[in-house]
Picture 1 (cartoon, rainbow, N blue to C red):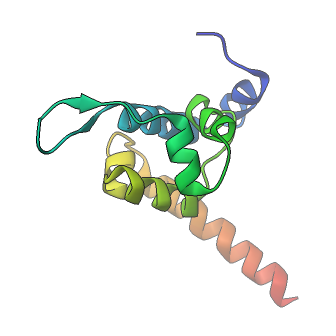
Picture 2: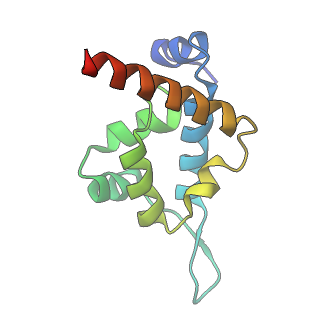
Length: 115
């Protein structure tokens, strides 16, 4: 698979988390199971984009790892695809590290705003 320049940038910045998250989004979009028939169905990027009030191109960028998925968008995606948030994070072994980095960044921003 050829990586775009934005994806390479994410790799260089050690943001494998967002790249993996995009892969989980794509998988979730392609594996919705109809509760009546038991068949797998396919949800288009356009349908997900409509639920988020964004473009299908943006969903594609999330899936490829070109753009990071904001937490608000992830919550909306989770609700739309009827998947728990934990589904998107279950394969990520370093969730504690991600949480620590978020908390540290939040604290720094909070302190900056207090000055």
